[in-house]
Structure formats: structure tokens, C-alpha cells
Length: 125
Image 1 (tube, helix red, strand yellow):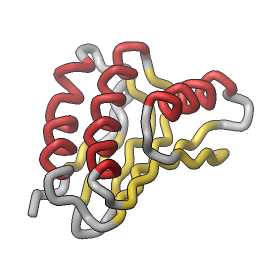
Image 2 (spheres, rainbow, N blue to C red):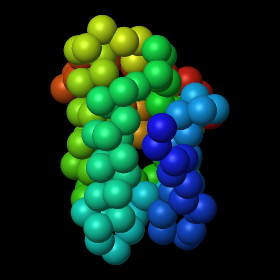
Image 3 (cartoon, one colour):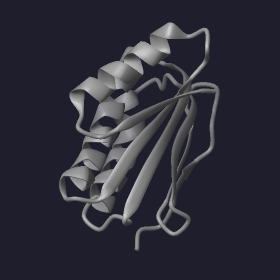
């Protein structure tokens, strides 16, 4: 079993927890790393490895108050690893949190939803 992946939040990067044993998967905070490829690479690698032997059910919670354009592609790559789980017949879902007054964040979540076969659930944070 993979070790949990934990990142503490900084002013420019989100808090991340991917923990198989606890069945907790989330990305919370702000995502505007200086080099989004470098920041997200170990997360994408972890998610791709997890997709080979996932839990019966995987729910990824996304609660980003802000994310820059370079983070969008990296987030999509994380989601694509989860989409493989869905295509392999396991329950997979993304819960997308957004502020009630942040239409742009909700729209971005809907755009991700339209690109993927993973069900999205939208919640006001």
C-alpha cells in the first residue's frame, strides 16, 4: 500500500492529503505555485500509481479558493488518473467546493466535469 501523500498549505500551494487507509483525498486552499509542473508531478505520479490498485470508492474533495491557469492542466492530470479508476468500474467522484459568490470557480469546476466521465458534486463552501 502506498504511503499517504501529505502537503501542508503555504501562501501559494494547497494542503493536500491522499491517504488510502483513511480513504481521504483532498486538495484545499490556493494553488498558484511558481512551477506548477514541478509541484504537481509527485501528486500526479501518486494518483497514477493509486489508480492501479484503488479503494472500492474514491472521493476527491477539491476546495480551492483560487488556482492559476498553470494549475488547471496539472489538476486535470490528477483527475485523469481518477478517471481510469472510474473506467475500471470502481466508484469515483469529485466533490467541488466553491464560494457562493465565486461564479468563476464554479464555472471552472463545470468545465472539468464536461471533460471527464467522473461524476462531480458541487457544494457551497
